[in-house]
Image 1 (spheres, one colour):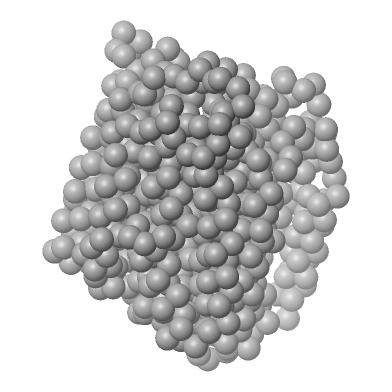
Image 2 (image 1 turned 135 degrees about the vertical axis):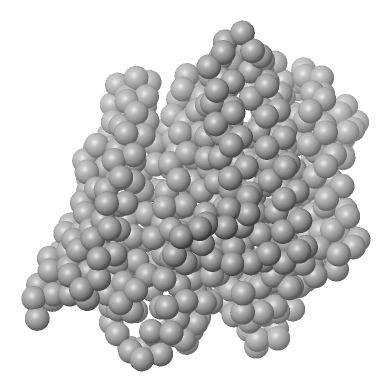
Length: 99
Length: 476
């Protein structure tokens, strides 16, 4: 019974993340919204793992956290390198290529 | 518990090469081209071992069924390693000898290759996810490798934001499938699904996986990142992104959907069919409007993902083997086409506008010859490899009754001939508008292009020699 509440919460978090990526224009906020999506998946993993009595759900979360940390390290570096060129991280203004 | 390291030989060789390149990179006195040669030698040894294991038929699972080494994963190893070797060969002249940071370029290429190999041999959704991330994270950095260039940084950022967005969908899809099937092991999901086929968790997880893969292999309507990334990224990296990672995406796509989710085939086959038709049509139609050759090749590679998806929509043994065969051909010819773009360098950098290619046929006959061969193969003219690849894909779809998809595919092949031939016509039949000063031919690039050209012609003339390994390598 309790599993449903966790899954609803995680679905809500995931949706907030997706909407945030689609409507926000600041690259760092978009990045935070992506992290929210990953953490929504983590919540689902933990809740389902507990419901099934299966430890692997919990273990996956460690892998996902590691991946998310690596992603942040690389992502912020790339965003900084773009900022050095344009003095902005608004993704609407960073659009030199079109076709 | 003992581990059968022999099964993991290709992966271990890549890791060893990675360590060696990292060590050599520490010494400033050693020329940076050493890193490139080490990468090529390591990949060549891994390629030899993979082919050897494929012939012996070595199979097995390792690390508590996390990794499944079988002919399918070994065949994909061959695709990845061939494309990595070709990409390193076209990169060496492109980067030049002066760049001090070259070591990390090859290190990241090796890491991306390792990620692809893990994706093809993952027997557990979480291993596929880790392989995908290892590959993607390396590629984000490589796309933004030219830090001084605005376009390259922008390509890196666009690829990062959309790639990470796609990873979120992919991971959430895995979480929901874990909830629906109670396991993330691919064979166990397959046996669990027969019991509770209609679980809504499972179905929504499946659609999220389609979205995640759709972004990674650039299917319409998830393709928007591809043209910008290909245009902005270094050309050698555009070649790399368009080849190996796409093949790796399809390796996992095919294995997950045709093995783990085969019992709910009726649910996803419609989606995949529509995506295939959309991807082929939109990719080819938008490619016609492009003036920049890198963007044109980007849309063409989107269209080619659509052709491969026809193999998945066929959902039979022939569909898988023809998709594998097509991916091998596609990687070779697409890297060849990008290599020819690198070959057309002027003093101001690369000439990327299609109009710049006017009159090249007589000024740079070798370049025009390579470019023509690759474009004819991409368009699917006999006797090139592109023709036999498309032929087997469409035949497998006809066998499984997807007649409409094949008709759409055939119309698209005709449309695609128009924009590929436009470049050929410009090279041989137009006068140049202005005199461009082209660089002399770099030797290694010629070696890479010759290898690609031999591959394209050889597969086109002797298809069965390359198709039969694919046919015995399917997992169904």
